[in-house]
Image (cartoon, rainbow, N blue to C red; front, top):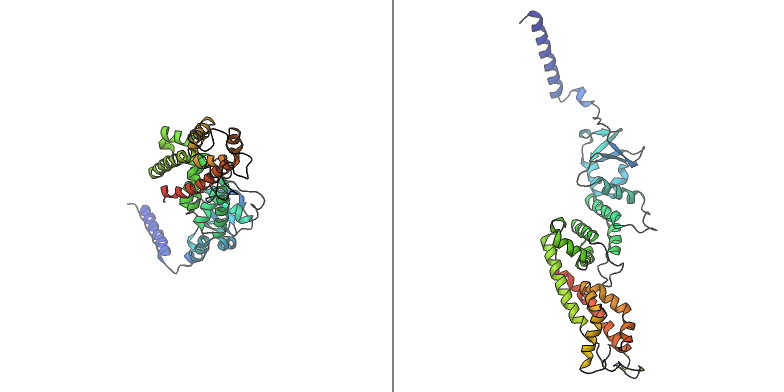
Length: 347
């Protein structure tokens, strides 16, 4: 080795030793005074980047500049992180400490922040399911009880678990599946009853299940439960639908009975008490199409029967007292069937 190359190698070895000594010396002033690492700029949230914010939350490639005190107040998860994590070990962005957040999507976090920043957001406008489910997921993950309570309350109004009259009409089966998943993920079991019944009565769901089972994100246990619940309801519907009105009238009817003193007239001949009464009822309920419609939607169609069939059956010869008796029986069947659905879905 030439004398020049030898001196160059000795110099490099000396420099390497100096670097090694600085890195391993715990008392090195260079290490103690080193500034927190600045990270490259990420995509800033268009809505939630406050110039005077003092903490940055990063989800995937999106950064949110927010207020640490506000996050600590409403989220137990953030409160613990801010209190326990060593900020010296964390990255920085725009002069603020960066806290990466996993297990939550950007959309869910944005929906959560929207209600956190504007608590009166939903006082005049009812939020949609597409808004509420992300809030529910985020509040569950971040342990924010107030936001969770709000989301659960609003979702219960959309998917009531204690009203067999099924207010609000039908819902798409794909929407119901989304609710079922959210109810399990966030432990809100009462949302499932209405959602599962929407699947039971939706012909498109059963068509998709038969043709494209792999595309339906439900377990085999759920599908089996839905099948047996549907089969049981159809059997219960047939028994209920084929039961003719009682000639004795309904519970609580004044001077009850078909053609009693309170009524101007009882049922027309052929529908009055006698062997032809049940046959006449079977004919009428089939000819009107009520039986077939109810077979597809037993609980929902009972509500339609209660609300809109009295005149139709009265016109063909059934008296007021008999139809009131049937309406009472249909309401009782609704309640009983609705309460029995949970037997098929225990998880």
